[in-house]
Image (cartoon, rainbow, N blue to C red; front, side, top):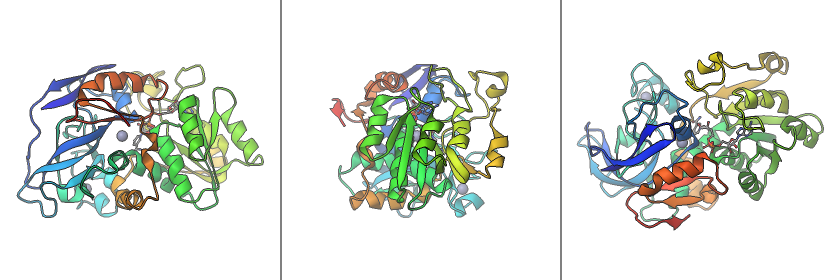
Length: 384
Ligand SMILES: NC(=O)c1ccc[n+]([C@@H]2O[C@H](COP(=O)([O-])OP(=O)(O)OC[C@H]3O[C@@H](n4cnc5c(N)ncnc54)[C@H](O)[C@@H]3O)[C@@H](O)[C@H]2O)c1
Ligand SMILES: [Zn+2]
Ligand SMILES: [Zn+2]
């Protein structure tokens, strides 16, 4: 089968790889209809993780079940399904508590597994024609058959639940003010989720004009940090106080306006922007090993976090991989009922063969390349 294979920094290729197949009785094999490219893939693509060449990318997967293992009880051939990016067992201590991002059995010696991601276990990604899904009864979310809402549903694999998770970590409540750093797909989903939860005002910080325009389109206040000091702007809009809650949807590859990386920049700006006793939801990625980090300490995931101010303000912070399964069912039903349309972030839907080009554009943050969906099984490019 064909798949997107990581070759070296800034280079992926669409190549023939061994077919995905059923390996355990609890697996299903899915014919992929959509697999999205994510900002998380870019950390690997840029050589900023320990990812080795040869890895098949793709953790945001949906499709139609092609074959079913003998031990699968509820999933049938022909079912249309979307899988959380987390691979999880459903029976360990963390899965039972709903913390499927930290499953204890699917990735030996580590809490958490995922498709197509460095350190996240032996699971190949779905930027390919087929995907093997382990513990299929637990990991497949059923979707209405057909082609309706394909883009919206594909976002249930990661960014919609992850954006929602950020608001859960920060316990965003009705009437509150929220600042979101990063207007990438995850930040936009966090802002959108904050509104679904009834926030009175949401500020979205970035410097990409096209992305800030999308934030404005959903009713958020855009803040361009390349023009003004973001924390100062946020305080000005909130009577000098700062917002109730804050969200990091950028992570360790945060840049200063000149484009230079400063890994703790967003965390420290959040500490300034959120009012005393507020809460921070951090879903932007931080890693324990970053070969390209700007300092020796940063290469080991050690950042200069302003813990003094953090403590003084009595702030709290939640972090980590999103437990997608904790929210994907409810968010799916909001899509079906018309209460949520996360697909507004999707800018491109292209055939698998165009993946190398799509990675380049998305990585450059080229104008209008907000979220790219790969559609294996199609030949012609189709605008989203
Ligand atoms: N925790 C999870 O489960 C989870 C899931 C998915 C993605 N992520 C992570 O979330 C982050 C965002 O993902 P994405 O797909 O939106 O990525 P992205 O790279 O498309 O978006 C990041 C955005 O941050 C902006 N940015 C950079 N520096 C900034 C700064 N100092 N202040 C404000 N904005 C700044 C960039 O301009 C860009 O628009 C990534 O780190 C990704 O790995 C985490
Ligand atoms: Zn993702
Ligand atoms: Zn588990």
